[in-house]
Length: 231
Picture (cartoon, rainbow, N blue to C red):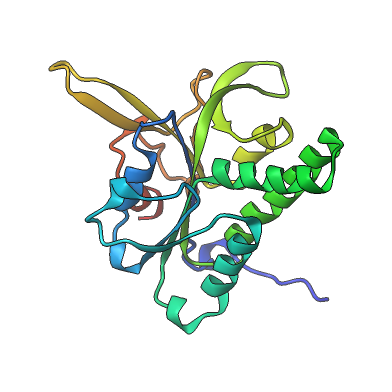
């Protein structure tokens, strides 16, 4: 197979592959409704409902096992109906990993092997959505937990079962956003996307060459975030 040559200045516009992690109730699902064009977006829900997106106009499907995840991906890749979809949201990666692990434990009573098989399958899921939907924005959400990295440091990051995925997962995404929730001066609830790794919360954003760094905290609006990265 011949290699494919390219010039970085001529690379076609790519979608932004994004992971949002945050605690329960922080607004991860709600933030999916802030994409630029909700009529061309598609939600894959593994959380048994999308009440917080009611009224957003987002279309989607519900998945409850790994076979349905693959079915949804194949539909997005090959269906004529999916050709107009420019943004795909998967809510949430943590829930999908949970039922993937449950399937593996049914097949393998050795817990270590089941966790290893789950990690391998979930790596395949993440990379398939990244690689087989070129030009589309793909957004995934996950729970948040305090995890330990390879150097033994503790920080808050995406929470999936087992330890094999926690350290690898951030490297596969263009943007890893920590959804922070706090109070403003008037005691109102304030939500922000953290875009940098402060040591306590895992976050990072890849930017085009010579583009200035993004603000460390941004409004939790995906349309504005993607414009800041790509424009």
